[in-house]
Amino acid sequence: LRSLMGGQHLTIACMLSTNGTSVASRALIDSGANGFVFVNTLFAIDLARSFNIKTARLPSPIQVKGYNGQPGRPVTHYMRLHLTVDQRRQYNVPLLILDLGSHDIIIGRKWLAYFDVLPDCRRRRLVWPAKLPPSYSVAKEIRWNRQDLIPAPRALSHQEDADRRDRAFAATDQGSDSGYESAEIALISPGGRPYQPAKAKRPYQIDINAISANGFRLHLRQEDSELFLTSLYEIDRLIQDRK
Image (tube, rainbow, N blue to C red; front, side, top):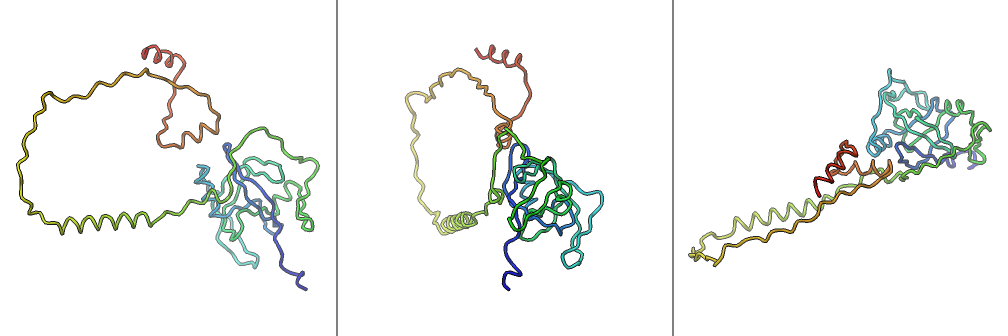
């Protein structure tokens, strides 16, 4: 009788990607979810922050009902990402943002019907039509795990140590006796005026390297990076002026 209820959900490994970066996750296959693809609100926030993308507002809210028929919070926003399931990539898939509880992604009935995919619960897999073979791509992507998107908690102990240090310094300054006897300090006149030796001039160098789109995107995320437009003519003039 225990086998009549319970057990693991039918979840499938999948990937969400954009701009050469992807994150691995798992999607719940739910033919009872009357929608296309849903993404959990917290997961959507992590994706938007990590991928540097923005969500979009729906033209009108979509009312949602739970398994018990009770109305829930309406869907008001969505985001578009590439979805890869069973090595089959689908581009710019709209993901409806909704509170999903313990699941990050739910693939609903409309997605199954649109791609003519059948869930095989016994073998815990999806049955794909012959017209949708695995996708082929030679593009390299930066792959993250789900945990990589979760921001690290701030170590409050470091700030507490700094506050204790400041309070200790303040107490030492207040308790110190300022009645020290003053003493004359003789003026020391060096024989020659001190000077700093001139620094040797180093030849000016310009490093030009070709990088990929992924490296260019990661380089722009650094605070000290500067983006500007130039031409080969201007670079040649700059090199000639520095010689």
